[in-house]
Picture 1 (cartoon, rainbow, N blue to C red):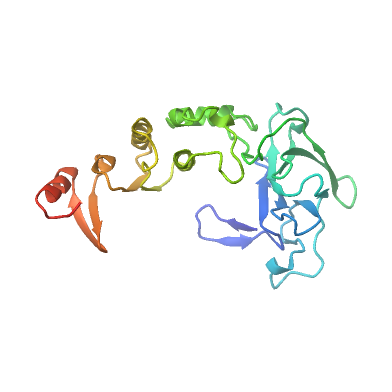
Picture 2 (picture 1 turned 45 degrees about the vertical axis):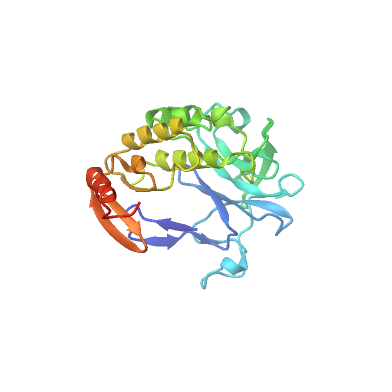
Length: 283
């Protein structure tokens, strides 16, 4: 588990000996919790409270300074209860009932959330879990605390989608944010998968956004929605669009033809069309 400085210039190990850790941090205190993405490698799912410099028993991820004695998990969850963990999240608001202001473990296999109780009154910290009631058709992977309200509700995410002009794309799904998605993704068309990937990328306000044939599997109405969203991205976002259709790049600042390993600058759209019409470049 690594910590990278805000300026990206330094990196240090927080903990070692973890198996593909799914990490959650408390936004108020900086406390870290983790569970293994471990499937059936061990007979139970561990939930760890991370100590800086801690070693957590998985030998292949051990480092030179690690000792043979690792730190125990806060709690083990038997596989008949949770066969595979999806992650940890610290909920900071007061609208989740039993999960209010608490560490919540997300189960990929069950699926569903667990409230994690921590007993730190003794010399050895220990814990317990209680499944939060509810019916979850698919695994709960959207486990991030919303920065606006500190909760796990869709309210802040819905507002963020509206602000980014992405609500129209979400509306292309029959049940919006509550659309069931199987672990294999078979419940979604190729075009829908493209939309999800685009929405996730656009929500990040990226410095660089690369779209490779982004409109290949969507209809013309949705393509227009994508164009509108691209126009609303921050001016600091550099957009690299790879496409075969000129209308897809009509608003580009600079156009290049790539053909047979050769890159040719076309400059503006007008010049690109002129090159095609007069045989200077094959379509």
